[in-house]
Image 1: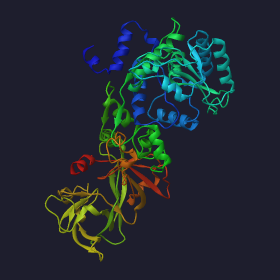
Image 2: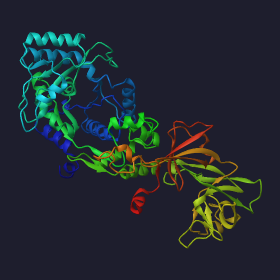
Image 3: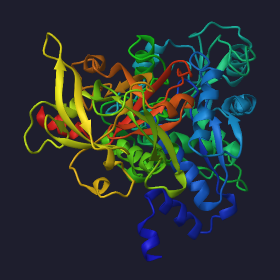
Image 4: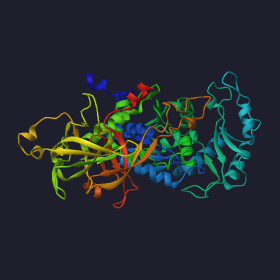
Length: 561
């Protein structure tokens, strides 16, 4: 067991211990239970990978259950987006479930609790209830309605269900312990009146169950063996178990709740409420904006499912919360894209380069490897001509010996092409360089086998042919927030830390092979980084998103700060 046991996370150790104590492996069942009130984010990805990963490890089914008990905030559009995200991450659920499937069963159990004297209808205002709950250091005081007769409670609860009362008039509370040190055990609310249409049950119900009453009972109905949630629900476990005590039968699996720590990502927020505010106030263009930490945003930016799964595996599952630097997520994106992304040439900040001794009107098509690390990726042809675009930062009139790109009197190789030498340059009235004049060595063509082609020069530049280049909109993304923990400042609103330079739009020039690039296809723009085709792109107007650079420049920027 030696090495294998070391690699298990503490949740897996719990499962292994249960199996060792005689729990039947065939009865293992897990679930991922999102509320459909927003889009999934990178934090949910860890939970998805944990639950579905356990399913794969133990050959156990995993349910996708929507905790849809709040019709005021939930929509079918969110349900569809969540299903798409889980599938895109590479997982398939066993059964698609909804808490709303169990509304009648939950109601019947609640009626049974009323009959047993374990639940009652409270007619106090929410302010009165909050006041009589007391504080952790002192016991609460019982509601004046706590000892209502059973028949009166049943009649009122039936009236609540039928829609006889306005919102806020009555709630159903469990009768547990107003002196408990756990505030959640002080007669928690089980149902409230809500006159709102539900995305699945429409107006069939005028009462909706609370999360704590719904969640554990849903686990029980589905026979989930291990109910895994984040640490903020640790105090809820006692209530989870109390509710289960009221309904479980000895011959059925009793779910076990266990908690793991959230992994917070730097330079972002993951609260759905805060993400919704970013959308509603127009800071971003939607839930799938590539600057958002949502799974759909990461997908649109060009992240791969593999990179997100690898990230989740690296950060692991732990018992204490900590802040994960976003550069680790970028590392996994870079590592996977390096293996799969075809190499192409694009120039983001162009300056014209003219090869004065190359015949006017002549063009040739050079061989270029699609991915040097993948022999099966093949090659393509790129057009070469007298006039090219190169990156403006790749040329200097004068430079020291450490500058290995193009400078006056210096030589570089053009990727897949020839060695050129900068002879002169032209400037505008403001001193900006508008054109570089070069000569080339006709015998230095890459791959030709000639002695000149084997001559070493220290710099190699990417380029595109002016006559063949396709203009493209390129969206350059940076961190959405300038602070690594924007929502932890008590005296400041997280919106104060918005990075004004999180999106920069430029017109770039790309090689003609990209004319047929399809949305969500990924490429390495050689020497620049990884880019993917945005959903807004069309053959008439190409749009690329920068996914991540070739190197982590953020640490360097931070060091200069």
